[in-house]
Image 1: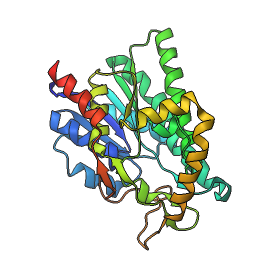
Image 2: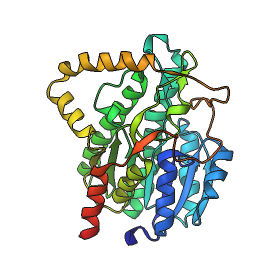
Image 3: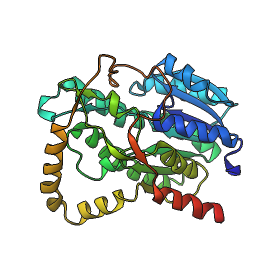
Image 4: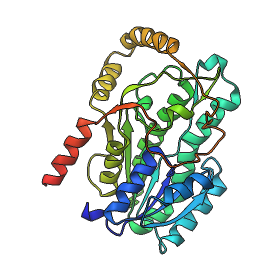
Length: 308
């Protein structure tokens, strides 16, 4: 990825999962990165895996003032500017919405949706100066029903609506900032094992989740200015999105059956369970230990780009 060399990139949620994978890929390509996350311990662990990390910043993206300070500080650490910002931070409460406390769904939306909006508000002026790129890690949950994660799905629907609306505004105002929205299906990250649950039982172990490296590769392609503004990661997700858009009422019945079966297969959370809504990541891990598979769609895109 020669075009990533010398890029200056800020990554929120950079201490684990997709964010950490993006940082590692950019680091290998010669870019310089600054990582933002809530916990100092996880950030220090992530920074040890990188050779060109310009710094780490402990900040909660749901706090607008903290995000403003983090973006300004990151620009200084990277030599006075940002070429790209990756808004990746997210957290979720899992379980029936009727059983959720308002603090749980409120925190989910504050981190996943408002955190991204706060990051955009702070980053856009910086990116205007460098004609840079703002990349948002969304989700297929922003396009299709996602039972037991209703507040998270609401946040991701909001993410997509915001990014598409902001893209129109930037074009209308002729702002030289490029936007990209990466929408993966389920990904093998610590997200699933760190979800807050209403009854101390974790989501059933997903099989066939996509690998974080494939999602990260799409983020890197977006930073390099390649690919469409909005792209899905995971070939099986494309027909799911299409069917839901074409006949939304038809998918509710089958999804209800699958949701009921999945609810029965939940696992008891271990005593060491980390609550991702309340606790920052303590160790830098890309994977959540799920049975995963590559995204052939993402790898086909990457292969096509490498031949050009």
